[in-house]
Length: 193
Image (cartoon, rainbow, N blue to C red):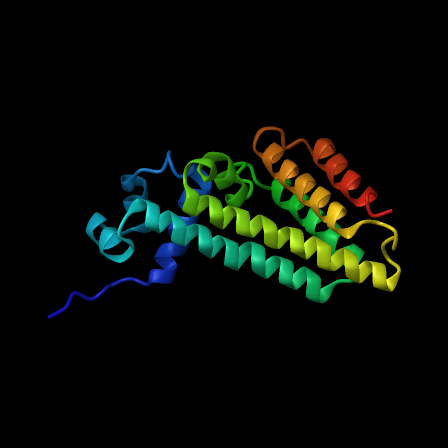
């Protein structure tokens, strides 16, 4: 008789995501995963094959559930300029209430793993490109409505906004000072004139 899983895979993956997000890939041991997921090693390996495969599944879950869903919501429920402002403001709120300084799982992964692992690097790069496209679409929509200056080069500004956002998320790990974070967000918005 085949072995049956006695746990919810989505719940287990959600727990793994939180563990990796808090500790990073290298600092997370299999024992951390066993303890944090409430599963034995055999169940983890049978379901996810390896720590790396589990990490990739958790990273993709974060990208889909957090980043992608959030940007879609902002784009679909707010006028263009406000969508960009809300993105920065909501991150400022997350940062100011995050005493553990987890920051952004994707940005943390970009710094820790992406340069040394092509597959993980491709996931991070695709996420960053999608975020850049979000900025581009919103800027173009704002230019059509007159909320954003029509003479701005949307591609350049979308890249500058991406760089400001990533910079903010990196600094959130080491210098989550409210005034510093606010000045970065305000500087990003000033580029939209």
